Length: 532
Image (cartoon, rainbow, N blue to C red; front, side, top):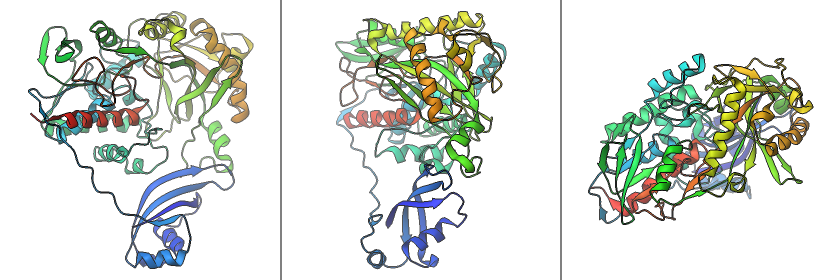
């Protein structure tokens, strides 16, 4: 098999990939048996000549050596061998009870699936509801303001990522990444996520994907329970012996893969009280900003903006304030999406971003956040949670105590005014919005840094700091404010049999990295224990 890298093809070129590959190798197209796209990225640095940049695996029906010899010293074409499937190494300890997996977010779902595929018959516990009932509860909240603390954007099957853009980008370079992507495709995700540089699923498709993964876990002998909150853990002599569900039901177990999600604040408190090692970690807070998607498309793609092969453009922006040592940056950018209500506790306003697979709303939104250090919050490991709560409660007050979100135009924000409802786009947040000064519900260091960052971002993306761009507060759930401390084998440093995984445990930052962490956690458990 041959691998071709750095293969540039103009976006406007309609030639088939097979013909282009044959031309690249100097072979007749009949010699190409198969072309497998490994990676495809967009190079938009030259706006009048935007290209796709491919990495390909190619199987040919002629001698590969001769083809390579003809290409001479072409460093972008090499011969490769398909890697052998990874072998699972089972440990020697025998489990008396099936392993428990807590949390049906990306980490928990993938951990439970891997365990089920290898005969462990896991029990998966999710505090929220199944994705269909959850979607109904969330829709009712967005339309009426009727909030359900047990079923919302943060809690329920699929985790917080179920109501997001469904981005699968990650900075993690893990050899098991293709394994996770294959699971998602087999569960109904678009096949192109396996090679796109910035793959996404979209909240509409993702809901079916997580449901299909749940069905597969059950088919393989696992059990899934909803509305099953782990309210306590049984620890004796530093060893896990069981979990308590909903305050009154005991389940014996000597292992648990624990992926609670970044908003399980009551769970963090319970674990801390039981002596499980937890430490504070950095996070970020800020606002959501919205622009016409056409503005972002023009800035990123120039004359090719709107080309059907390019779709809705995204962006990534960073500003470092040397004076304060703070950083403002875009986060969870949702092309063609909307801003959504993401509260998980009564009396707090939380925002998030979401897109359908088509990304066709015509509105781009992203979080604009500023880093928060543990020292900003206090000296207790859980101080970051109270820090988040404080500003979510202030936003709730500013919006009118009915889950309306506080909004402010960029023009008003930069000029120190408030009250304008003249925006470049219609508000997408439901149940509703109220025009206020966002300085009422954010720390001074956040608003000061954003004040400096917005003009800089406007120089990078023309129109980004347009006076009519709308900012919605507050974005507080960028990541977990705590980390459940574990060793290199994924086990808690204080509790034998307790395996913290995923974003809620403080070891991931998004759907893909959380799913990978869940797979790796399950593998670590299997390396220690064989199926009972």
